[in-house]
Image (cartoon, rainbow, N blue to C red; front, side, top):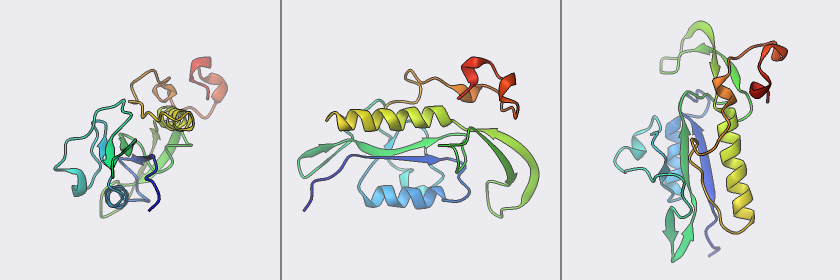
Length: 157
């Protein structure tokens, strides 16, 4: 068959559109492990210790070392990769019910930098999956504010 590919899966722990169980099942079906220290809201990864990050090789398929696995972002919802601030109006657990609206700050910069680093190092022939704490600028620490001009320059994306 075709050689195994390097695969980085990222998931939001509070994803209301794609349940953690579905993402976990996809990752497990591909034979990939859990990465980092956050577990998905799914029983599929509860028995295995996660692989520490940063990592270059996470699994071996037919003698081929492969970088890949699932990184779960805490305090993030479905739009975390592109929307730093998300208005949330539904509860995170079944039964899903309308709740008072609040704004959640997603780890957008961390997720984007991790994905960009994985792609850049993969194209260079040596894929690496960063820990999200490893040198990542964190504008998600800045308050969500509809007036971008009111944010410090270091917080603007």
